[in-house]
Length: 198
Image (cartoon, rainbow, N blue to C red; front, side, top):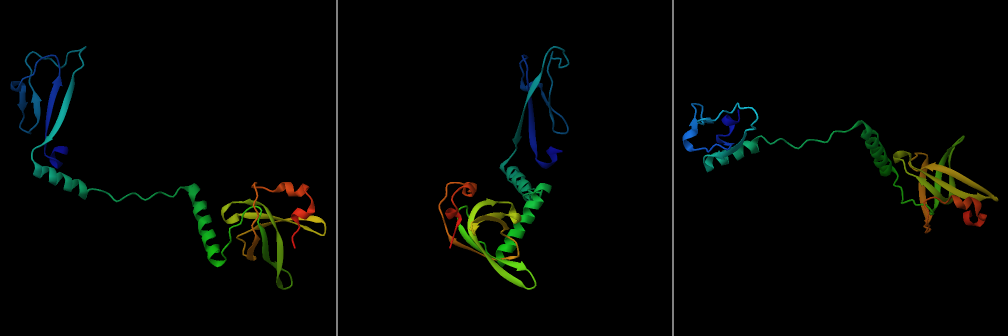
């Protein structure tokens, strides 16, 4: 019971039209305070009786003890639960951090001219260099890709590279260009000189 933990006195005062006096208050053997009203029947129908309850602490010593009991019962903060939907996000973040340790990736934005050294599996593994302008970037955690465009021998070529792939050995930003769009697909319809780099 609450009385055993915190020694408090409960005073109940009925809100009723009948005047209450200290003579009507009775303390029982258990220390509970009850009321005795002359001529007041609480079981009367049609009347809604309500009571005011007030708890008071007897002394300052008891108050200090009560605070120490509450401090001792405080629980450590709850750890946030990992939801099922967050698991893939956590795994993605860890994979991105690990690949960043092996090969740091520069800040790649739309409009940058980049040079990518890609390991090509043939008879022997050799590095081939791709150079072009980034016309779009698709953010998807470890599966983030960039689309590079370049005109080779009069023909427009676009290649999609996953930037965290282990086959990519180096990504170098040759030049930053200021653009006002997130996707530069309009370059497909423009003159070839806009997508040609030396």
